[in-house]
Image (cartoon, rainbow, N blue to C red; front, side):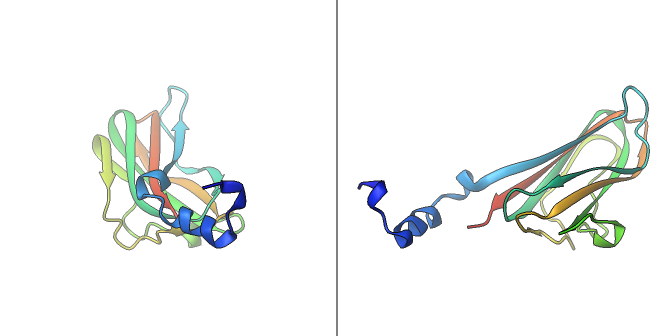
Length: 139
């Protein structure tokens, strides 16, 4: 099949058949306290490059400790009123690694161009933490 001769609907059908494994991506955000304990507050933003569905999160720290992160989403600069995590925030509680695939109460849809903000709600002992959000690109 010559791909330069495909009709738009044929291209759409090819994309529609992509397996989920080829549409799986991650959004990664690291907070580094530069050898000091991480402080609370807003730590930064990411603009989503595509529409997607959030499937799970993983959180890993440099040492055993506690940390809770809230994620905000909006089409403009988000704030605390735009939380997508409900009461099920990514967190460590006297742990170094934690994850969740259930995402109870989460808003799991992301649109292309949405802005995600990462806010440290609480933290103790940890000097560096990385949050990885697993997503599947919508087609």
